[in-house]
Amino acid sequence: MLENFMKNKILVTGGAGYIGTHTCIALHEAGYDFVVYDNLFNSSREAINRVSTLIGQTIEFIEGDIRDAESLKQVFAAHHFFGVIHFAGLKAVGESVAKPLMYYNNNVSGTITLLEMMSEYDVKNFVFSSSATVYGDPESLPINEESPRSCTNPYGQSKLTVEHILEDLAVSDDRWNLIALRYFNPVGAHSSGQIGEDPNDIPNNLMPYISQVAVGKLDKLSIFGNDYPTVDGTGVRDFIHVTDLAKGHVTALNYLNKQTRSNGSGTAKKNSVGFLPINLGTGKGTSVLELVSAFSEVSGQAIPYQFTDRRAGDIASCYASADKAKMLLGWQAELSIADMCRDTWHWQSMNPNGYTKVI
Ligand code: NAD
Ligand code: UFG
Image (cartoon, rainbow, N blue to C red; front, side, top):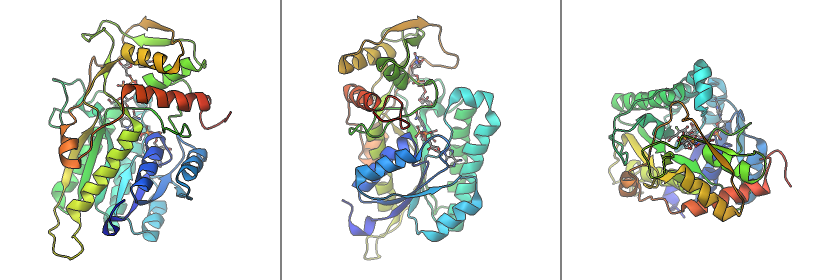
């Protein structure tokens, strides 16, 4: 539990979503209070209800859009926040290519409105959901935070643009403390099987696709390419359990607390954090075929698959250097690929239709 002086209220935008719900649980376990703000565009009240049940406490939930300044104003006026964890955003790469304005409007304009409101209410601690996508096709592996950044699709550009905005903000005023957490490939679900990833329609991402094949909702997995220069020709990614990822957010807040607060006697010096990018990954690469095989073993289900052409825009390999997170935040991933598969399967088999229908 946190010491009393560190107990703080956090605004969690996008807190009804996949990573947000898991982070709400981690915040509660660490002794933080929080308010969830989400427009439910890609989530449901049922997710919030389940988090409430899991933590044994009603969640303060506000249905609202980060682009709605008036609505945000009411929230900031009603609470005294220590900081904001900003998950709210759209995340489908393919959709972003078809609807770039929608992505820039939501992810960039929405974030600007949120930051303006934070500035108005003097809330200067911010944890942003960035992505390994900002590294584009990496020049070397593992990818550290100093690696060059470039993006080839509007989703990635929206994340990179927000990072640039945060950098400029940090330069403009050293009271801002802005952490950009660059997630690698979040997968898995809460060990209870009560919350997890609930994609609309057919999943774009590998793990939810595999689990829907395993549960019989989809016939077979298409593996996009088996001619990459990797261990077995299939793509390699740094899969990270969403529970580990959630804990990473708590350690980021703890870091902001330590850096920016006096020690209670009023004598400790406050340090400005500025703009601080940090990878959240395990540091280990796993191939598509290795993940399929691990999932099959853990679930006891066959996962039929076929090899198809490479998917446009995909890279061969991507995995993190996780050293900075360990050094600065004292955080490292603990859960294994088997844990990720087991918890995904638990969630999927208990909720074959996601949050909409419960067996
Ligand atoms: P998600 O879609 O499950 O959650 C995002 C939440 O934000 C949803 O509940 C949605 O309703 C809400 N939201 C979207 N636009 C909003 C708006 N304008 N106002 C208020 N609420 C809004 O996605 P997730 O997987 O939990 O991702 C969370 C964040 O992490 C996103 O910003 C995403 O881009 C980023 N990220 C995700 C991944 C991943 O693979 N899941 C990887 C890297 C980065
Ligand atoms: N893959 C398949 N078949 C599928 C889906 C995926 O073979 O049906 C392969 C992909 O080709 C890739 C690997 O599985 O080699 C992982 O693909 P995902 O779509 O699960 O994840 P990506 O690495 O492409 O992208 C994810 C998020 C992005 C984020 C990025 C950060 O979707 O939003 O991680 O690393 F930016």
